[in-house]
Image (cartoon, rainbow, N blue to C red; front, side, top):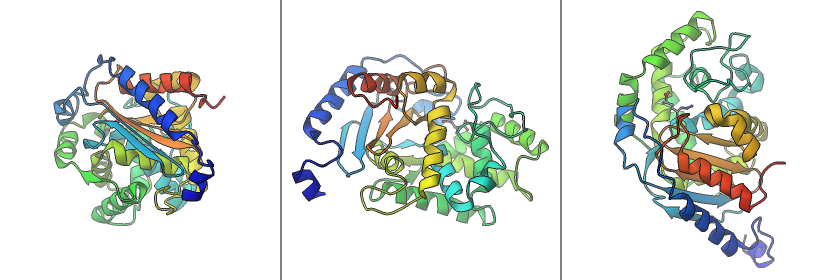
Length: 321
Ligand code: DON
């Protein structure tokens, strides 16, 4: 890395200038303070609403953070691409996609609907993510399955922070009528693998949503996806190339809830948001970006995160096309 830096061969050669521009956009976007906190999970509605954080990590391991970048938050749906990548890596795309499709749903993230094959539309909405959770090391005990997931998250962040927020988990389980309804509906249509323990699967899904990190660490998780599944900070391969590629394809078409088409059109990059107000943007072969601001728009995306993404591609030509 040092030789590359001296020869100006880093993926972002003029790092100081780039970081300066990123900081300017970050400060400009702070003025967008509309939007509401997620209230359907009571614990999520009690966080300080004005937090604003951003971190970047390149595939060469150049990093920088702005704002409240060490403040912990739950992954929520930002966990979905990572769970998908891990299950994909473990059982392969055919076995995995026997249970879940690859189409944007065109509906809200928790809508009770299946595609024309009677499968969830994609792994990044609740229905699909619950099915993916049911496939995660599904011959092991619930404890071993959760251990596998949290250890995998630790590998994605390298030396960063990964924790677990038990209050969010309990709060989410307590108020999860929609996810129970979705799951019973899916079980009626034989979406799940055989011998499913539905309560275990839902508990695992809620627990994964309640895994905690911060922006500084989440940027390394995103950068691992930008880097073909290899953690850029320590060179460890976490998921195989194909799992990483398929994850990014789905993030591109389905990562931003019912705003995914608009986001693909205007921003043109794979991304995923969660109802805690977190969001990742992946610039393949360049960098991962993590954002956190808990005020959400009507579709459930972080208001400042989306504004940041739009301004980023105006300043830098990262749009895929
Ligand atoms: O299942 C729920 O409603 C939340 N744990 C997931 C929330 C989330 O971020 C929605 N994403 N697609």
